[in-house]
Length: 282
Image (cartoon, rainbow, N blue to C red; front, side, top):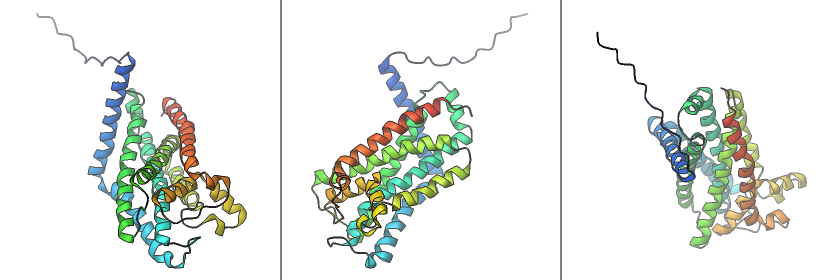
């Protein structure tokens, strides 16, 4: 009788040891997770369409329904005042999408299955971040096109316009990590709904729609120091659009703070996201 051939199990790939090899490994795995996210757009286009449509409806509603009653401090077209604020709001609304996607993967056990695979530990969160940044670039491009159709223009130089776009994406990058961390914390739909609901008061309590000088004193101060307001003011200035400047320190240094606030948010939420991901038990 011939000997039975033992069952050969597949060999798990070895984890790279050198720093460059680990970086290539992490990059390849992160891109694979990114492609997974973009594949979902093809299979479920409603998610992407909804993310692109909502800010368009918002800018049209505020620009045409309420625009006639709005006065820009110092004069100017309210639509040109509004559109940079809506760019920032679009970056904020994207955080809810991040929270929803991360929480869905976690609660369905997909994140846990990823953690059992021989893949870079950072690939899941990095891939999610890259996917959301690509979505944000698309949303920003579409909203800019709508703004141009409404009469908005970027009057600044090409360099100033590029810097303004960079500040918007920097803010979104920071909010991605806040969304990843909150998504990893959520265990049910109630928490996701709460985060999505809070986007509105946080976004509206800024200089995106009206000048803080028109608010009660204490409320205007909160709006000025809202990190989103710094990006709103800086992008208005770089685009050459009319807007409220203000005399406070935070308003006079909006360009600086449009960089500082996102960097601080990244410094807080990136390590929190990594730690939370590593400590997941479910």
